[in-house]
Image (cartoon, rainbow, N blue to C red; front, side):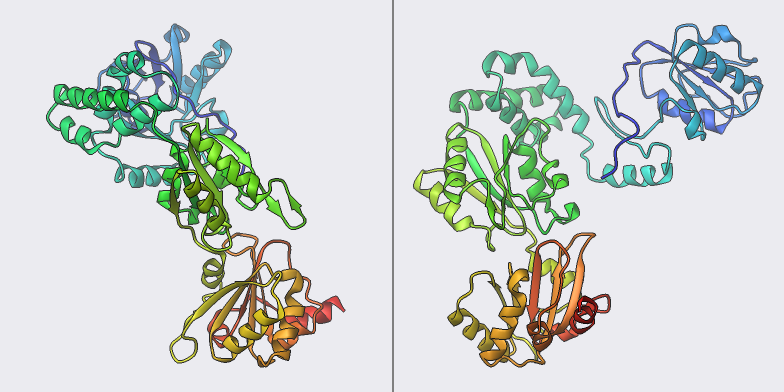
Length: 466
C-alpha cells in the first residue's frame, strides 16, 4: 500500500472569505462545490462567461487586484491568463492555500469528490491523478447511503450532553452511539421528524443506562487468504465494532487496519518453529478480555473453522460462559481453486472434496488419502509444502496412481501467488523449490480440468534446480 502524499482533513470555512479567480465553467464548477458551505464566496473575472445565477456568490466583473485576497482563507484559480498568474503569485506570497484548476503540480490542496449528508461529509480524492475515478466512486457510494444519514448525525449531536450525563466515557457510551445509528426504531422515528427521533433516542439511552456495560463478546472472524477485497461485509462490521483485535501472523496489515483506529491490536502469531503465544495462552487472553466487557475479534487467516484451532477457543469460551459468534472467511483451498479455475467437484469425475493437513500426517492417514484419491475424490492438502515430495511418494506407495494430476498454489488469493503443476509421480521425485508462503496442494483427476497455463511444471522446475 503506497503512502499518501496529501493528508485528508476538514477545513473550517464558516463565515470565511473564499476567492475564485475566473469566470468560466471551471470557476462555476468550483463555486457550486464551495457554496455548499457557509463561506463567503467571491468570483473575480474580467469576463463573466458562465451563469452563476442562483448561487449565493459575490461577482466582481473586473481584473484581479492583490487587495482581493485580503482576509481570504482559500484561493481557487480558474484563469490561465494574467489575472490567474497574478492571483497565484499573491496567494503564494501571503501563504494562502491555493488550488489551480487542472494543474495538480501547482496546487497546495485538491478538491475531492464530496458526498454531502451534512453534517456528515465523505470526500474522495485521487491527489489530482484520476478525478474521473473519484467521481465514479462517489456515485457508487452515494447509492449505499441513506438520505437520512445527516439527520441521524444531527440527532447524535443533540444527544451528546444528555448521553455524557448518563453514561461514563468508554465502551458503554460508544455502544450506545453504535446502537443509535443502527437501531431500526430510531430510523423509523426520523421519518416522523426531529421530536419523534429525539424521543426514540432517549428511550434507547434509558435502556442502556439500565442494562449497564454490555457483556463481552468474542467474534471469530475469517480474514480470508490475505486479499483485503475478499473480506466479507460482516467481517468488516465486526472489525469496526471491536475494542480489541487479536490476530494471527498470516493476516495482512491491510486487513487489520480495517478495524477501528482506536482498537487495541494484539498479535498472537504462530509460524512454523515459532509460537509467540501458546494456544492455551490465547484461550486465556480471549476469556480475560471478554470478562472485561470488551468486544473482541479473533482474526484468523482463511476460515476460522478450517485448521484455525477454533474448536479449542470455542470450548474455552463455552466453559467460561463467554458469548461468541463466528464470521466465516474464504478458506485458502477455495481461493486456490478460484485462482486456477479448478472445479474441485466435477460431474462424472470427482464427487467430493476433502481438506486435510499434510504436516504431521501418519501412515494410516496417507493410506486413507491414497484410497480416496484413487476413487476420484479431490484432495486439498494444507501445511504440506516442506513435506510435499515425501507425501507424494508415500501416496504412490499406498496405491495412488503416479499419473494423478497435482496442482500447487502458493499465496492463494494474493497478488504474489505462484502456481505449480505436474503429476503425483513427478512431485514424488522431489527437487521442487516452491515460492515463499503458505501452499495448497491439490491432488485428483479434477485438477486437470483447471487453468494451469501459468503454472511451472514440476519436471521443468526440477531440471532448472538440477
